[in-house]
Image (cartoon, rainbow, N blue to C red; front, side, top):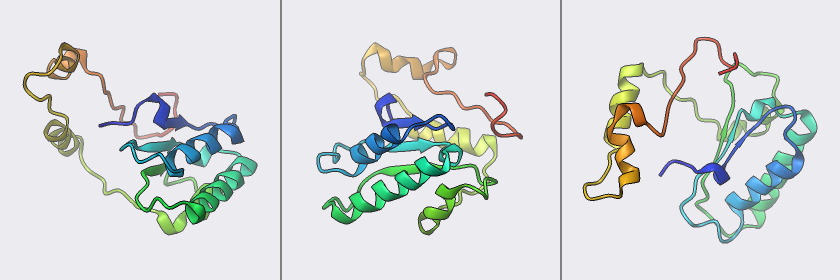
Length: 145
């Protein structure tokens, strides 16, 4: 399943240390094995102090945790070379290939299928005008989408 609202933190320069720490704790602490996917979006926008705290909390919890398979993703802008988050987590970096819009749509259609006999809420995925998930593609990232 896609991450829900309690599993995603959209970062900005105003994002605080507490918000970041809570998400990291949820992702890596014992009891987080409930198949959730925790995500930091736009982590490159965090100020230096919060970025340092993110690094500190993450590595401290990873070393003290007995959870080998946590689900924690950090999304950053590839052009944000001056971001501390990118430098601190460089060993974990994964670069995604550049797929066309058609390839992405084909993949999502195979992955986001509604099982037969499901509740009416799930039927929204079957009708294009009632989509629950939308993607915005832009040549210029961060332009107020």
